[in-house]
Image (cartoon, rainbow, N blue to C red; front, side):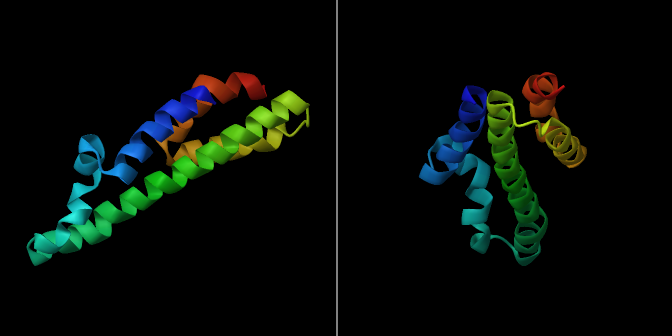
Length: 109
């Protein structure tokens, strides 16, 4: 969980508090009204959809990480179901796949 906290909190906090790194990563959304119409449409459609997907996946990764840790600690025997969800999510997100392989694959087998 420390890894997830460092990985997720750092970037999310930077975006929420608009420090230099956070402003750089979401600045296009903040100043999109100043852009030309065609650029504004691209920012509002393609880039914003990717931004929403990335944060949705990160939310799922956090929940799955907590569920995996609790399942292992309490020996709830939900490893097969958790593995199935991890693998499915990993098929859509390289970030989720990497986290699964780094931490949870060995834990759930």
